Length: 94
Ligand SMILES: [Zn+2]
Image (cartoon, rainbow, N blue to C red; front, side):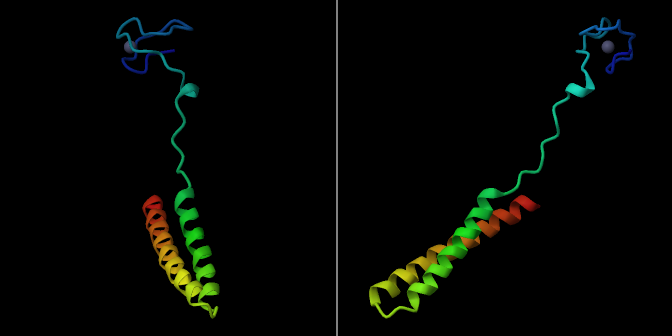
């Protein structure tokens, strides 16, 4: 085989090129290409946001004033979560 760096003939099993000193790499040992990571965190954010949104709607339909306040707070938090999740999701896809 021949050196990938300079083309010098290499002895079978040689670890380094005798001419240029480059390491003789095995193509099969090349590090795998980084795979596109699924934006799990963003997805969790969106799902939590949706969950909070549903929970907020349930609280808002109640008669108890305190529950309605809690529902409004939950609605705001869930919207922030969902929006930030969607933004993260969009960034990962691009
Ligand atoms: Zn070489």
